[in-house]
Length: 33
Image (cartoon, rainbow, N blue to C red; front, side, top):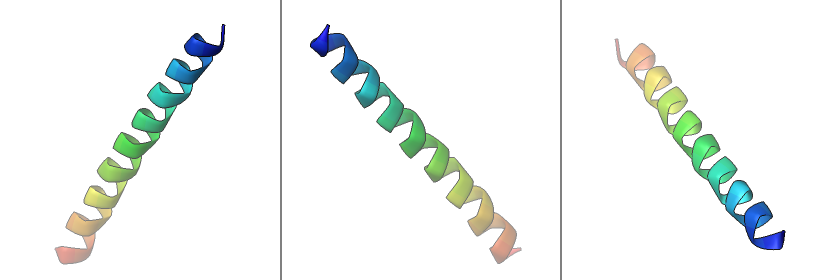
């Protein structure tokens, strides 16, 4: 089902974006301190 594939791809993008945001936030804190 194409719609399901698109939705799972979108969910993957969101997960990656959240992970990148958390990771960059973590590095920012480490670099600041």
